[in-house]
Image (cartoon, rainbow over all chains, first blue to last red; front, top):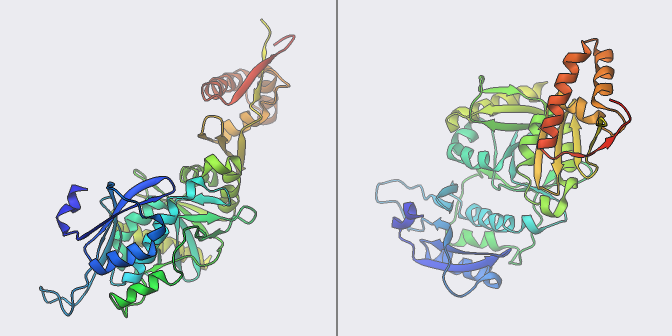
Length: 279
Length: 95
């Protein structure tokens, strides 16, 4: 965490969710007030290790360097989860991250650390770590026509194999994220998408360190094995979790992406999904 | 010594897709991937036949030499045992 320690944190608050005790820190007093009020039920006394860090640019007017862009950034550890002009997106992503902390103890669905990328009405499943990696090329993704997920976890419907959002279990005001537009209004169109309803997955993409081609087809069994490692609640769902994931993979085309700079991965993903659209 | 009739553990969750299998072993919290050959052999380890019998059956279906098949089946048997995917063998009268 030392990497981020210089960023000027003015608020540090400790929370406990799903048996995990952690600290959230932010550079904004206003965001800190929102945090304290939204998550008051989960706030605990005493110190904890910083886990989420939120940089909020709530400076009035332009930046010192002449730029008028006001980026807000959410970090998990030292990894950037989202960097955006939309503070409400940061808030909603943070709340979704906190829901993920409980997924391992839930038995109402199979929870997968993964996200859905969409393009021209087609959807592709990518693993949670790849969601984070692609976040580094979010603007390129938008230009390529790809909408990246705002969350790194989702639920698999047991019978259909469709994927949907993690149903919230935390208690906070329904309009919590919207309240953040009062701290930092934005007129920008969204760069990330939240899954609102269950969708069928058209393609799944595994991601490997070494491969001959930037992208290639892989057998379904191989894709199932890859994504099975991303199931978060095997301990609660047991074999049923693998069966649900199997139904998802069975209905999808399966590809493997090779490790490459994020921009190149975005392009491979977009091109494959596009050709998959026309097939 | 009686020949063993290998049998896959009954408490495993096996999902087969396009001839490949992914196995979840809840007792050991492990996930296994079997390629098509391993999947075929694993699927016939039902405790009713010896390795030699199974190898002969496979050799007949795929028209390949039984000795070569038996070598492969025994190698897979060792792998499955190492991965703890099999129940204890059932003794047979001959092998």
